[in-house]
Length: 156
Image 1: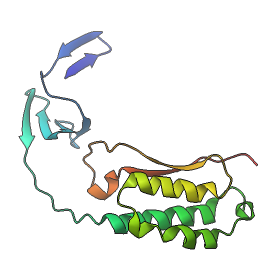
Image 2 (image 1 turned 180 degrees about the vertical axis):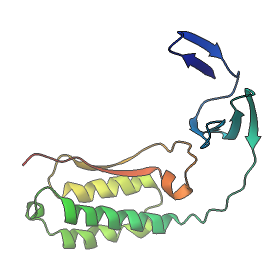
Image 3 (image 1 turned 60 degrees about the vertical axis):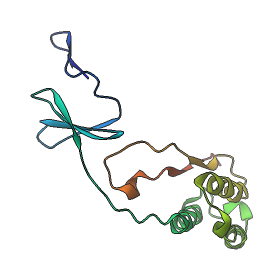
């Protein structure tokens, strides 16, 4: 870990072999928390790092999560698509058509593909679903989902 003083144009090594990952400071900016393979607490005054032991229970319910994402995407399109008539498609009907596949989907990549197929029914070339690689973070588990739904606004 390096420290850069732009006013003095100096760079100095603070700590070796600390690793890489997402960094967050405490409110007083005295400690830095590094999240990569576990969490490390870096004392900025001492230049030392220690591992933070923790245990967190998380009741992962992937099928319920996928149902929620499906409902969210469907509702967002219904409420916010760039043309009110949704290009004349039967959006209610497509919900029923595609929702029946949810019990058979066991991963986010297949969910992405199914959502992309459903969104493709709109004939809006800038509307799609993607899966991003999960990055380590210090936020609650529900805020670190690897599934992101994007909507780019197309021009009418």
